[in-house]
Length: 231
Image 1 (tube, rainbow, N blue to C red):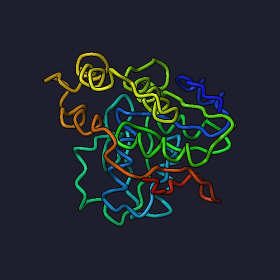
Image 2: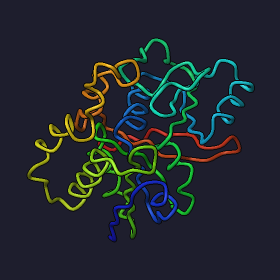
Image 3: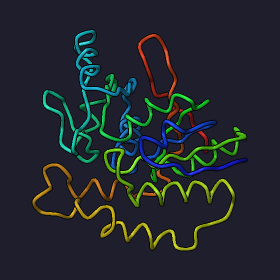
C-alpha cells in the first residue's frame, strides 16, 4: 500500500485512491457526533448558496456550518459539537458547509473513494482501510481554512497511518495533550468562547470513540455521507 500524507486544499485536489479527508477541529468530529445523535442524513456542500438552495427545496433541513469559525448568518447551527443538542437534530437532514473540511471533501474529485477522518473515529477509519486494502491511500490534513497546516490534523493522519501499519505512535497521548497549547489554544481563550467553546476541544480530542466511518457517496442531489460500521 502506498500511503501519502497531503495537506490543505491543494492536497485534496491531488489525492488519489482511497482518500481520507481529515478535519479534527471541528467539521468531521462534528459529523460523527451528529450521526450518533440520529440525524437522517448529512449532505456536505461547498458554498453557502448550495446550502440555502437545499433549504428552498426542503424547509425542514437544518443548515449547519461556519466561515472563519463563526456560525454562518441564517444558519441553524454553527460547527460546534457542544452547542448542538441531540434532540434538535435527531431524524433531521443536515446540510453542512465549512471553510476547510467540507471544502476538501467536495474538491477531492480524483479520489476513487472518499471518507472523513478525525480522532473520534480514527481506529474505525484504520479498520476500514485495512479491510479495503487500497493500492493508494491519501490522508489529507485540511488544516485551518484549508490554507494553513494544523497540528491536530497532522497528528490524526499520523495516528491513522500508524494503526494501518500496526506501528504504534509512542508519544500519542502526549501530543494529544499538547494540542491545548499548539493547535487548540483558541478553545481556551475567554474572548473566543462564543465561537470556540472549550467543551468543543474536549469532544474533538476523544480518541476512538465511534466505531464507524462516514463515506461520501454521490447521487443526483450531490454528496451524501453514509455511515459504515467497521469495528
